[in-house]
Figure (spheres, rainbow, N blue to C red):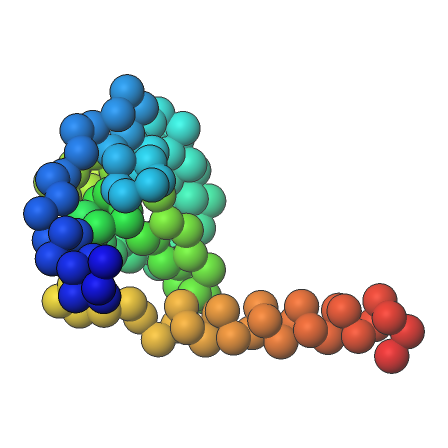
Length: 130
């Protein structure tokens, strides 16, 4: 079989049906959102201030997600049932919400990730006696 035959064969594959607990994407299963995800999002909003929501659309490897970012850049991401559910959740909790595909993620989140990475590297050096 030639290399181009592999590409042609792959173009005819059908999407698989949803599995019992999520959606099949190739060889992996994407877990659907559940009550635990909602509880986590609620707790994040209640325990932090300056939170904004960024609704991320479904992709080939992930279902719809809601990214919550606090004032200091701390963040969390969880699967949600739908884009509408995510915006409704944010409205209900008085959190501004945006479509992440349009506006991207805030710089403060990237800055927070960079700070955490530097802190972890510093901690590893200390643990190694350096």
